[in-house]
Image 1 (cartoon, rainbow, N blue to C red):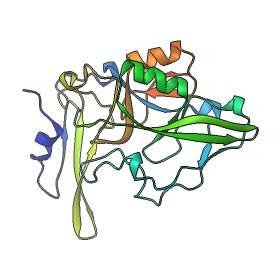
Image 2 (image 1 turned 180 degrees about the vertical axis):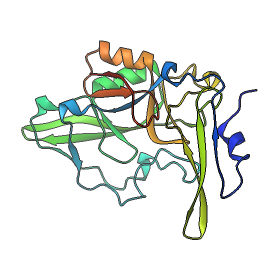
Image 3 (image 1 turned 60 degrees about the vertical axis):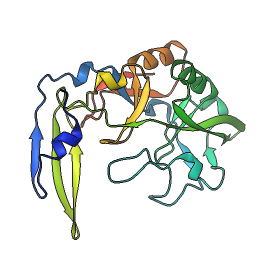
Length: 228
């Protein structure tokens, strides 16, 4: 039977730390990648009215439930200092949400319908405005497969309280039985990260989508998979 992170947490008493070694390491060959803004394009979009720290969009973790886009009380104000032609299709404005173009949203919805929470926005550039979407993955899973990647669990004391931290510094691999029919999700133990299937990544590249930097999931330091 496949172990879960919950199973491992139960084996580490408060105040202790432990490294669980993978039985079959395969993070580099996992079906999923982690996606980031491709800084080759300088995709800097400011969010002038972003919520206070800790109150904005959050993908969800063991210590803090998901905070969705429906909690935003006013329409986000996004600004781009360059001209519209310089905008790319995928941008990280901060917090647990992402800006995607209509073309990228349509592609994700075609491969994985209903998988995103979506809010219509505009980005105000130097020479006009562009319709965009602020999105978050709807799925927050416990998908890490400890049999296929190293998992380090550390108890850390902050003030009078102990907290458990899960580290996946050599890369995350995910349970195929839970993820083999989907194309994107977030994971409660790899906090504030968005994972795409390699099929979705390839489809985005083929469609001419710009602004994606893909790495092996949850590695520190990162290991590149692709960028376009």
